[in-house]
Length: 160
Image (cartoon, rainbow, N blue to C red; front, side, top):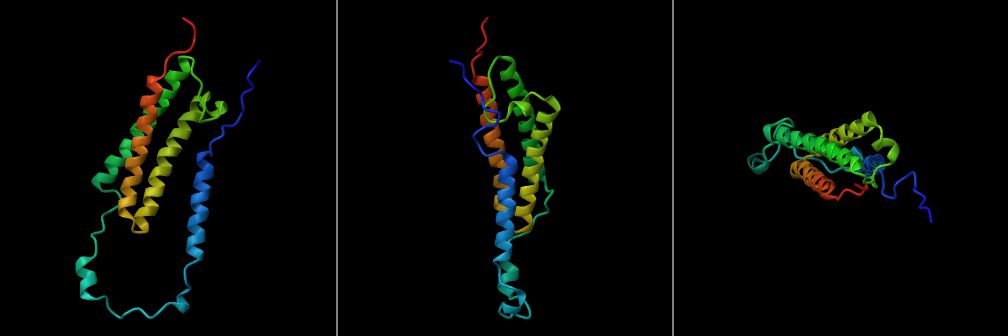
């Protein structure tokens, strides 16, 4: 019995996830009250708010640069480990073969993944979610590191 491979994977592709994220942000922005119906804001901020406001850090501070560098390094390692396990006879199941077998296309996908991570972190930064801004990059590094380890741990399947 010959197994028929699907051209498309069963998981939701990253562009679809990004589209869902953008649509949900625009829907959340539309559900906010219009400026005419908001209650009057105080003329001057109270002293308590000024004293206890969390410090705002610049987006390109040392910690973010290190986190984004880590994301880029692990995306590069993911590229190398995927190429390695494919040379050893394994089959990629998460990404279509058209992309994985095209060196420039796959490298572009990895670069786009790193750039998307930086972009979403920037959205979190601009909306004041500074912990999420950092946790996103840390989670991206962790998931990608797991994938790299998994790729290198797979046995070679082709005959010797």
